[in-house]
Length: 265
Ligand code: HEM
Image 1 (cartoon, helix red, strand yellow):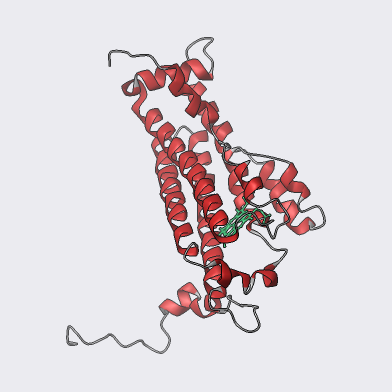
Image 2 (image 1 turned 135 degrees about the vertical axis):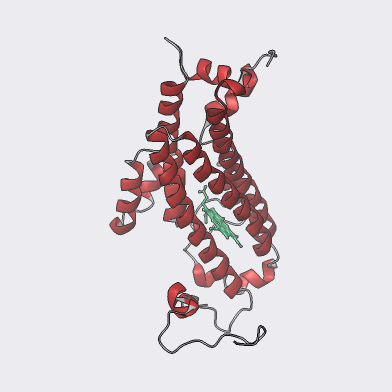
């Protein structure tokens, strides 16, 4: 028997960690452009790539949540959305890492990435679309790049969380003639009447709130790092980002709070 502390030796032909996860390829994907090299450019690249990986996972979970809602698997949908919420909260935290970059450091390589910008992240727009925020204005951004435009256009045509959730709510909760608002008021005044739907609804809220927090945290970081300069993506920068802060994926879930009355449980 091998010593308990002896490291197990890899066999020549067995699958390894590096193979399974394609680590060598992954580590080839960071190519700083600044000349002379700028220390913080690697961080800037890695943080964006890490975001894009998590965006991919978010889309995967959101698609499953929609499918689960469509076949009345309420807790299954809740399970996927709870994960979506946790990932979004992690992404809010990640902004704190890039905030350690001094303005002067960023300026050493900022002109090398111009006119690229997070504004052009297709996966971010896909997340918004799958959550129900489908703004055709953003398709225009890619009008000269059909390979990107097609991805987003397909996503905008797809069934989204908003539609799936509203249909499920009306199917499982609404009484005769009742609309979304009335059904939601009843759900929120008496969560125990349909606890599964209540938990799902709150998982939707967690995600929506975390996305709004991401927008706030991102704009504050941007102001701290570049002030009120124009964005590399060509927008007015902070002033543009501020206009996105009031966006909500599921406005009716926020709205319902205003209409609740004190009730016996
Ligand atoms: C030094 C760091 C960063 C700066 C200075 C910055 C700056 C900006 C600016 C000025 C915009 C507005 C569009 C433009 O004109 O470019 C923007 C949009 C955006 N950025 Fe960043 N950003 C930074 C880091 C990040 C990171 C790490 C992500 C993660 C993926 C990100 C994702 C986005 C997204 C998704 C948008 C579009 C938001 C919307 O349209 O609602 N940014 N950023």
